Image 1 (cartoon, rainbow, N blue to C red):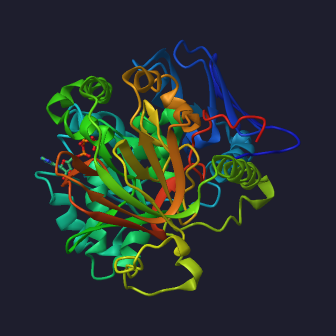
Image 2 (image 1 turned 180 degrees about the vertical axis):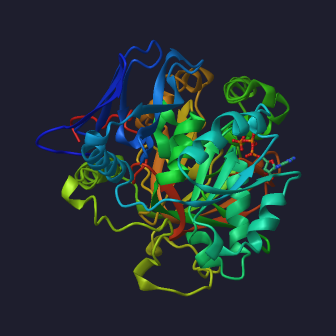
Length: 499
Ligand SMILES: Nc1ncnc2c1ncn2[C@@H]1O[C@H](COP(=O)(O)OP(=O)(O)OP(=O)(O)O)[C@@H](O)[C@H]1O
């Protein structure tokens, strides 16, 4: 999001030696306060501006400001800061003009107040979600004038029961204060709604309190992906971004997946370490090292309906998508008043207003080479398929993934030596494993897995399923998320200059 004016907008308020000078330049609000020790100098990008209002003789600005101290993860966490200043009568007009311009630039056509249905999973991750909600999230939603309806989930399946019959017209956004597991549950609840397609168009915004939090990382990036305040502000004023969903079918069951499916080493490191939840994100690293020590191959036959198998072509597609992002995210102030997206819900794809979930196209087809299917029939270290670059803070598994290209990214890791598997950890958080020759990468419309025994688990969005034959296919743009950017924020993945 970019805000450009020839001359910066400025406003100075206050009296008696306590003055605040606000300057809106490019896409940053600069605040300089004299006579104050705390928050004397703030520079907040527009996406961190929560609210600005002029009432009687007082200007109020709420924003997220970076604390000086760093989190254990190394980034500076964001604090909700309220700034107020007294306005003299003769300053009312410029103050009103400034407040209006700041709100328009900060909301870019999004019309507050948003009505939020919020689910808080008290047991997600290290179990601190309720305290964090009361201390940090409730005040932020109040500052952003959101209308909230909160459920603290009491059991697994609770959120699913509620969203199945949710009156869709009463809410703009579903907020999940949880890990990725609760989002999987909500999407599957929506699929059981009487109007499933409309339900799935209701955007979901995650607030990361789980152990994995891959979705929040994909939407907010590595700097802010674990910051609950940045995530809550995305719920209050993010823009709808449609994503593809996947149907995972085995026997007679159909489950919707939004993030990933895996078998072999990568499913065991997640599902085999659930007793280590107290370790937070670290449990995945412990699980990976344990998997390397065991060094078991995963015996499967894999069939993929391939759309692209050339890694260089996928890098070029990402590069051109990134160039489009940078054009579409630069918005001139002249568009601010008339920006179109007041409502958070996404529009039907291709004008299709059907309320029926998409049919399964590949369930009964015979996969043949002529129809673009390829077959792997040798033990692998793991199969990992999904959407969204990050699957966790330490692993960018799908660096060339795009939100709604209609494909699932399928990664097949050959069984390699323990030393090489250990080396693959180096740079895993910025997607370096993509360049390993032993890591095969496909853009696919569908794939099938036939296990040769029952020695592993299938993980779907981090939830455990039996290791039985299953099939996956893609449904373009079926679900909606909220994003501050309109694309996956994974710019730490570097596209080599030769591409
Ligand atoms: N009150 C509850 N008690 C027990 N389980 C719950 C409760 N509320 C939700 N759940 C279940 O907990 C599961 C995991 O939740 P969630 O994703 O929020 O946390 P997590 O597992 O710590 O994070 P991650 O999925 O990122 O590892 C979900 O499947 C959900 O159904």
